[in-house]
Amino acid sequence: MEQSFKKDVLRELREGNGRILLHDEMEERPGIFSIIPLWETVSEEDILTPRDIFNLMAKEGYKASHLLPLLKPTDIDFPR
Image 1: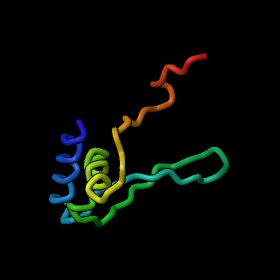
Image 2: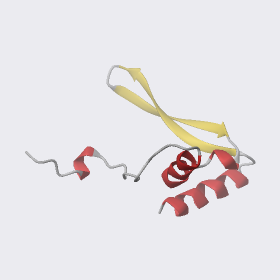
Image 3: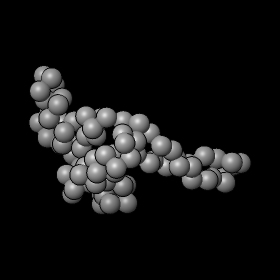
Image 4: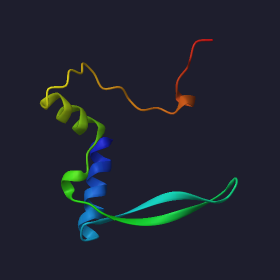
């Protein structure tokens, strides 16, 4: 799934001549938010999956034994 998403982002980056469309939330007033489009200029080397970052850190000498998936708190069944 990560590689598929990375391919999609790289395709958008090439089609956008080095720019990708991101979105941010801006608080207009307390509790009221708007979604704001942002065009960002990036290089293909800037597009990394969590696995890419993990491998890069290991290559740079960091001691890491495994990669943990990022989950929403609602996806985790915490013991009570």
